[in-house]
Length: 196
Image 1 (cartoon, rainbow, N blue to C red):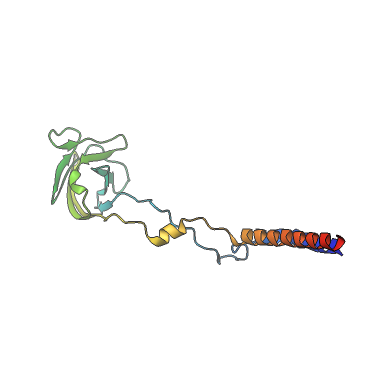
Image 2 (image 1 turned 180 degrees about the vertical axis):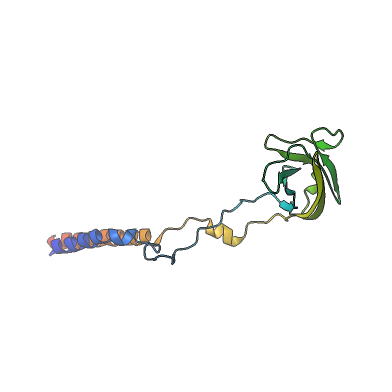
């Protein structure tokens, strides 16, 4: 009698691997994925940025490591502009970014970005900025608002979503194996009592 019980338990365990490999995305069809969305990356933040565009120039400004970094490109060709003088002004910030201007200046980096050290842009808030651009073949005036957000503390939902969870198929496998071993131990114990 005990052999058919072990054979049935083995057959049940043998049939479960296809069930273990199924998850909710396997049951989805084209255009309908019913699985959970991937969790958002916690702790990943981008530096505050602003963009401004005119008929001649595209400007992107960002605050990185206590400095205002500006990328300036031609609007039509998207080529970087490396021979510009950029005057920036706005509230607590005033400075000049150029290759050949003395005083409070910044020089272009190898990637044709202009950097101006500015500890004034560290506090959260909105900073309206005006950029006066001068190049050998013309100039322009661009403006925009750079918003520096307040630091965000991690929420409870972020902390909960970051904790590892056991997927349901794996949990099912563990439960079935535990039940199988428990039944085998119980029947073996029962058989040893009846023979003694």
